[in-house]
Length: 252
Image 1 (cartoon, rainbow, N blue to C red):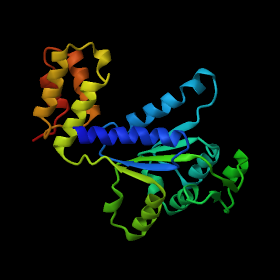
Image 2 (cartoon, helix red, strand yellow):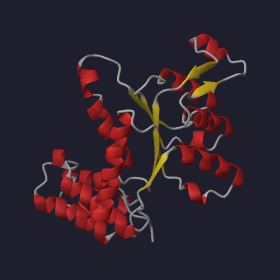
Image 3 (cartoon, helix red, strand yellow):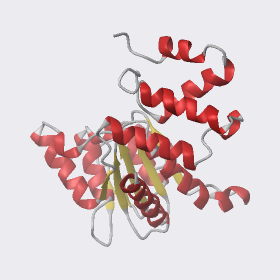
Image 4 (cartoon, rainbow, N blue to C red):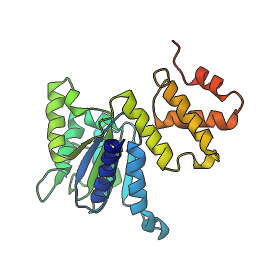
């Protein structure tokens, strides 16, 4: 548990360094539902709190889901100023596309000037008033479930190697069931994840005990599953375990 906690502490510290512009980019790799996104977004929201209070545009953007290469170019331009931060959260389509990867390699180049170009005709750029070349001075964080060193395509592997060489790479190393359970317990015990449920200490114990006892049967071993089961315990206190076995477990 100490080792896991240390890795998340490093992730938080590195996120702060990205916000401050000390670090240009980092890649965070780990299984789904263990708090990667929560930790990064918490640090960004804390850093952007004063901008929000002042009614200014925040200097970070979290992007989830699919994105085209032209969409990536436009987004990089929008957040190209110093101390702007782009977070690509499970946006794996850009990591699996040659054009997008080449744009990212340009944006994260180790040289003093990081110029990005789009030399193909584009009505999107004309409509948005975006130049076909600009200098990117912002920072980028990638959050992904993909382990770069397990990719089978050699061509893609070469691209990802080039991207990895430009970024700090944090593998949270939580590959076993036991490690995931420890992380779940750590977050629930030390944070305010279940604060709104008004649970007594033994209520929280019962939720965690249920998860630990049925870890191999649950559809997903994650913090999202904690919320699902806590919802059932709150809303159906008499039979929540029976309902959880039906809705949250795989059929054996």
